Structures are given as structure tokens and as C-alpha cells.
Length: 114
Length: 112
Figure 1: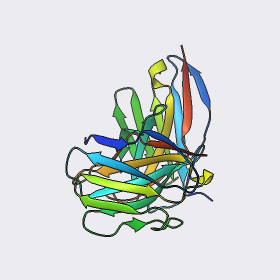
Figure 2: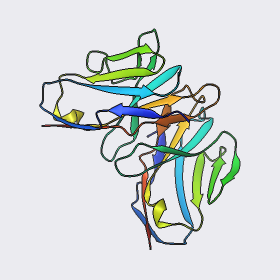
Figure 3: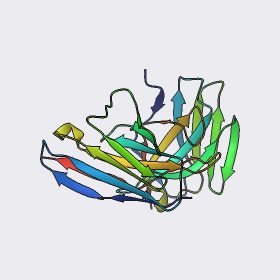
Figure 4: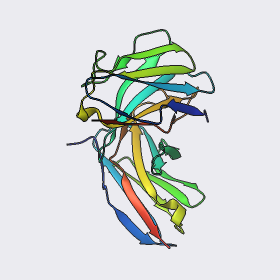
């Protein structure tokens, strides 16, 4: 399976600031996914990122708050904008290989907002 | 009603016991069923996946799917302390390049 690296692994930020999370994969993948894992809750899909097109956002998530870039087939970024304490969460990147391959996850970015 | 329900636990069992973890779901469009294991401060790690009703075995792990009851299970035989983790069920309507819907996860502790 693909090796997925996320940076940073954790961060503590001030409210009102923005943070960009990077996701790097060691092989080319068609689609990359960004999830949020809040304490005691399910992983929730934020958006799906295809290379060369706009990300597709799930209900409740908007591009202004979570802009996503997908410049090539091995890299994506998620920005958490104008952060508030409610954005404190783990943010996870996942990828699916070609064909009928299930999704694999990075280790996530643990974000705390003061 | 949530699309996927999973008992959050926590669940504590003695080493060597058989563990049963379960999820129920309401959307009959789900056709793919996965179990992930998540250790503290790590991302979810895929354990097993299946797309048909019945049992699928991999070593000490057995995944069971009953589509008619909309019920999936993961059994762990001869449980080990290293199995202590949070177990997440995940369901999809398509495979791979499709959104996954997760349960909340069951926190499991195996007591030596």
C-alpha cells in the first residue's frame, strides 16, 4: 500500500489564524481525501481532491473555510482558515490505489486552537 | 438516525479471549465493508475489507457481514495486548475512490 506522510504531525495555533496541512504520497494516486476526526466522533469526510480539478466538498464544509490544493498526483494540501476552538481536531489524509483498492490513511495532524 | 452505529465501548477483555466488535447500518446502498485499527496518535490502519455477505478470515481476525440484517462484525481470536486499540468500521457505496462512512469506533483494551 502507499506510504502517506502528513505535515505537521501536530500544532497549536491561535484563533483567527490559518494552518496549511500537507499530504505527500509515495506513488501517484487519482483521488485524495481529507477527513476530520473530532474527539469521540466518527471520521467525517471534508472533501475529495482530484488532480487538476476543484475539490468536491461534503455537506457542512465550504471552500472558504477549508481550501484544498491538488497540484499533482502525489501531493495535496488542506488549509484550515480563520481557526476557532471548534476546529481543534485530527485532520487525516487518505488515498485509494488504482482499481479496487481500499483507502489508506496517513497518521494525521493533531490541531489544537487556543 | 446515524447511517452507521457502533458501540463506542470501552471494552476490556482478558488476554486470550475472543472479542466481538459490531456495527449496524441503515443505508442498503453500502456494498463495501472495512475494519480499521487505530492506535493512539496514529492514523487508521486497514485490517480487513469485504464486499459480500458471509465470513472472511485473515489469521486471528474474521470479518462477518450480514447484508439482510445490515450488521457487520469483527471477531478477534486469541486476543493479545497488542490488539489494544480503537477499531473503526467503515462502509462505502463504491470501492476505493469513494467516500467512506465511519462508525465512532470501539476502544478495546486487552488485559494481560
